[in-house]
Image 1 (spheres, rainbow, N blue to C red):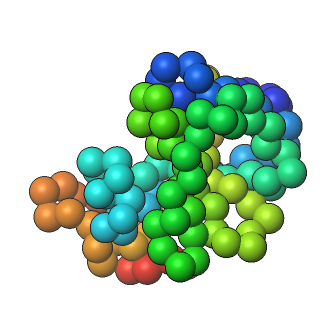
Image 2: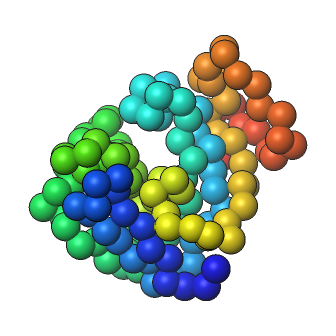
Image 3: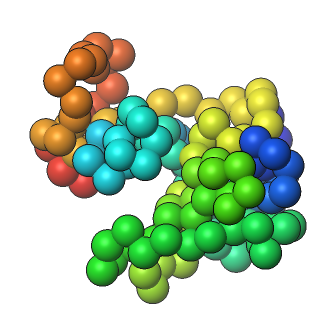
Length: 131
């Protein structure tokens, strides 16, 4: 897949386009990601300046902690973005991208918090916290 990347929420109220590069997919197993998604997050990332969002009025930004916010569609509930406060980068939930993307898995983070009902056996690097 070549740029630009495109994606949306489930109901189509929010659409976005990424005009720059995306990093490999990182799988986050922290308790916040698991609680919000029902499993673990699979997210890529871009420069925020490369992200154009249509339908921003349908986004709700939730302050998940003192250091970061998560965005979801307030109509259908689709989780779309994660951004650390004061960061110039935005994480994008890989499942919200229109495919094919050409992206590949890069690593697993916060594996110390992973659920006990699954194993990680894909051979990618695993980090107890964020690396």
